[in-house]
Image 1 (cartoon, rainbow, N blue to C red):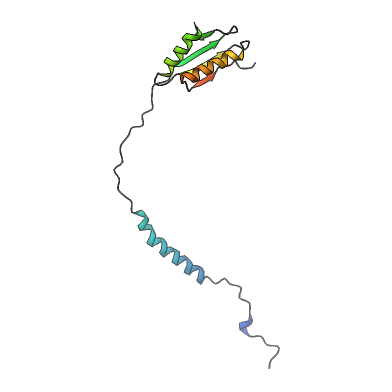
Image 2 (cartoon, rainbow, N blue to C red; image 1 turned 60 degrees about the vertical axis):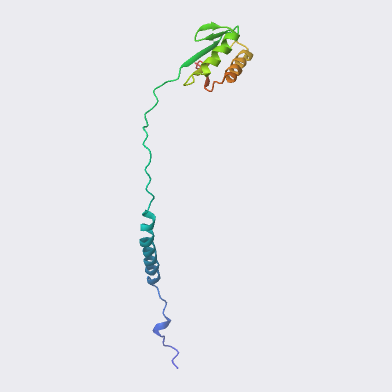
Length: 136
């Protein structure tokens, strides 16, 4: 009966046991060695060849202006309301479809610009933009 002596087995172990970590890493390595060749097999497909040349056809730009009295101008040439609808339909049938740039006078009633946009939409024009003057 020795009360004052300590055994060597009661000491705290202050080192990490690396054996389980090495075992896990070896198992993962074996799994990757087995699965990588399986993932490398692919189906042979003869894909079609295509050229990726940019399209050089620039769409035309139509400038539609509305002056302060509400009159329409197609590329700076006066046009009536009836002729405008026919010209918009002809422009929407072109390939590529032209861009429509609307320039409205600041004194014109918004109703005339809204009628112009409605006619362009009814004709089938998809690219409509507004031209404004920058604030100075």
